Amino acid sequence: MGMAEPQKTQSSPEDFFLPDFCSGPVVLVVVLIAELVAFLLVIARHLPGEGINLWLDLARLSLFLQWIGLTSAGVLCAARKPLARVPLRQAAIASFVLLLITTGVLSEIAFRLSSYTGIGQNFMPLSHAGFVLRNILICVIVSILLLRYFYVQYQWKLNVQREARARIEALQARIHPHFLFNSINTIASLIRSNPELAEHTIMDLADLFRASLKKTSPTVTLAEEMAMTQQYQHIEELRLGDRLKVNWQTDALPADAHVPQLLLQPLLENAIYHGIETQHDGGTVEVHGTRDADILNIEIVNPLPPANAPRRQGNQMAMDNVRQRLMLAWPGRASLDVTSADGFYRVCVRFPYEKLAP
Amino acid sequence: MKVLVVDDESPARIRLKSLLAEIPGCEVVGEAVNGREALRLWETTQPDVLLLDIRMPVMDGLETARHLAGLDNPPAIVFTTAYDEFAVEAFNTRAIAYLLKPVRQAQLAAALANAGRLNRVQLSQLSEQSEHEARHHICARLRDKLHVVPVDTIQCFIADQKYVTVCHNQGELLIDEALKDLEKEFSKLFIRVHRNALVSLTQVRSLEKSEDGRFLVYLQNRAEPIEVSRRMVADVRAHLRNAR
Image (cartoon, rainbow over the protein chains, first blue to last red):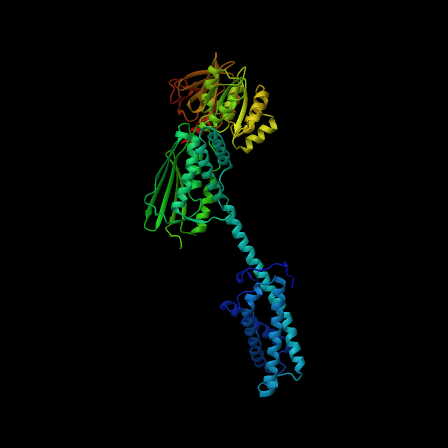
């Protein structure tokens, strides 16, 4: 069978390499495959112009093979749950054996039925054992091909899922190392002058890093996200002093709206990093939230440093990251727009208002 | 040993000062929040060592060091940074002293003990490689004073025989630099109009032909025009057209 991971146990039926044989599309596939095998056998058995009724033979074979196919589907459907609990190799062998038994039993029944009732007598070969053995042999070949096909398809599906997960993990916002070490330096300074504030700041920093180290981006309420962003803001206020002011005007936003975690924090970090830290007198970051029926708007505006001042590179990555996570959360229904005019840098995030599912 | 602490973040300065207070023979003579302020304080405090943060508004640490390196008797410099991969890599290859924040007491003491004079060659190599190729300020020493002029207030550079005169909105300044180097460094902001003159692209108002057939360029904050040599006329015109 060429199974690559012999000892792997599968945790749930959803992760099993065999599809759900009780579902409509899979039953259709089974019917199609049975019919294709019937065609194959008829073509292999008869040369055109031999005088035997080709269509009659096809109809007879189809009836028999559909019977086997659908019964096998039923058997595998019933056996899927217990099979999913054993290691992959054993599950594969068990399914294979089940298919052979089903074919053997059905061939036996067909032969007996035919000889007792006389129905279709003239279609049946004379040798009883030959008939059953031949059917089992055909079943061996077809089953190997089919099981292999399902296994490869299952591996492909796994790969697609793995890639999607890796993409989301890569997108999970990362807090800048610059921020980490500056904050630690601030805390080192506070430990002497204000131990209580130092302790409090370490808690804020821990919360932020816990969120940023999560492998996937969980969904939180807007209120939680704003609280986390304000924790971040407190740390920066300690460091930058009077230079940093943030004006939150977000009363219009519903607190229970759900958003990907770390949606706002990177945007405020970006505004502070480029717009406030680079200026001697600092400035004010404006955070304005508005609601437009079922669409929420959050605008983050920071002043731009004067043209002749040390500038900092690299805001594009944070922007693209947040934008892509918005797209994953609400495909086609969210947007992030950046405009830079009149000495101000404006980031506008729009997304639908959705309450967190209970 | 007189130390000047330069960092835009107050907690960082507080921490450095408290660490320095524990090192015998060390005296903090001042603290500055950016490079420009540090250069101003240098005159009055005459420190032996500067603890110089790299990322600061107005004038960053690397540019500050570059201006200090032009002095006859520059102070020693120890850079400080919380996280700056590229700068740290450059410092390592050029053996330039730096400290990573949060700074350890022992490392600070060691850095001060070893603080030699800033090596001009190392530093000029560093600034060539860094993104700070074009300074944001021009710095000149006038008697015992350091004059710092933001580049965006400069109208033109005029070369005399030995010196270059920097004409800016607040006056004039003599610097000991070659016009050719200035032209290269500020190629995005200034244009050569004559064998002996560079003018600021942002300050050019118009290009006119005088009665005696000479070409003259008029600047925003300057009454008298500057002569444009014949070879340069086409160049200047093209620049003016692009700017509009």
